[in-house]
Image (cartoon, rainbow, N blue to C red; front, side):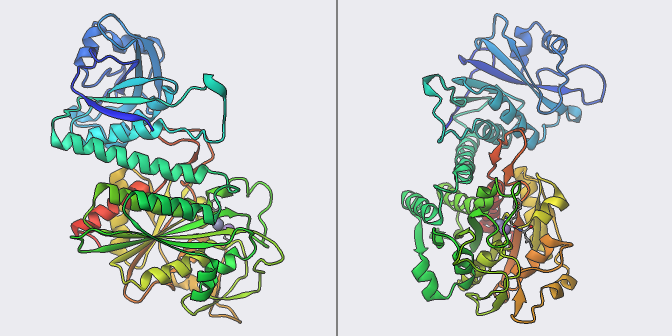
Length: 506
Ligand code: BES
Ligand code: MN
Ligand code: ZN
């Protein structure tokens, strides 16, 4: 992955292939450009004319805008990359961190094929530096494992030098280290999501988790199809029944000797969702390798917690199965006996995520954690409700739901609290079983949440993140978000673990 260094060098004097600076619209909403905020040396090298030059080139300072220009004498890097920051904050206040993160990401993407870039964005604190570093490292991501474009292939930006970095300052050093771990783990999730489903089977995913667990001192246990049958995991087995690639339940645990709390994370890991016998039509199945994004996020977050040495226990549960139609597949009308003992009438085999999650949530509950958070690409309905960049948060505890929303805001992930209206429960009444896996169409995301709620152990705080929208970017890249797997919710989960450690949550 892209390397990261902190540099005390001035923006104009650092040897690099490109220098990234910010361009903003004036704080007062007036005309013209503020370029470059907090980079006096660069302004001086341009004789104070950088803003004018950029205006000539059509720059507006809008977020996401990237304008390249050759450097004048006095700037060592031959290329200046001016990236839009939107409107400058009033009175020299710091730019919002997510603005910096996105700007750094847009610049890093525009620098694909470049060796070393110096980032001279307006950084006022170690936290700002972390945001810029995260954005640059996330924006530089590329998934090329399945492409061989020969030796001319351009790689992603190879090295990020953070200016104004204060490498001897403890806070800045820690910020750089955190940014590197977070970006590497988000990118680990992205790689898994982007890996095609013929290669990333439940068994292959479990093997990846086992190897990473070993590398990071984590305890990993894998239940294969035999162990799942012996344990009575009817939900996971029922979903995996149609596939040649049998299901797995992975427990991956990070423990800290001084931990006071335990956070359980449960991830939906459908390595491919064809819909099963309730087959998805063409046009709805091409991206369904992304249906293990929840498990990928959980896995990456546990590894990140370990690498950061957070003083909290984090247990990840990866509910892995492939949802396929075949002669052995679960039929609409079948009744499954779940790990909890409850029976579920499967009315639609495409509502499979809640079945694998239910078993994993019941299992996670047995260890009586302080909280359980599940993460899943669960419903198309959540995308209809919130669009493709915002995940929904449901919970059995209003304060916890609010806390997770705030945590997500803190790390720059878009989310919104959603209710679990009890009147929707009766739509899942089944004449045959304890509950059906489908209910009313309206509010489908909330119905799915209500289903999961029934499998949470008595008295345990629980939240559910439906990341169906933001998990996989089908549009063009933006900010630090690439096309394809995004790693949505990884940063939220890691921050949540941190807050749990501090004891200010669940
Ligand atoms: N994996 C899908 C949800 C999904 C849709 C994720 C689009 C990402 C993008 C899930 O398993 C599913 O098929 N849900 C059904 C539920 C319905 C049958 C009750 C849905 O949302 O249509
Ligand atoms: Mn489905
Ligand atoms: Zn699914």
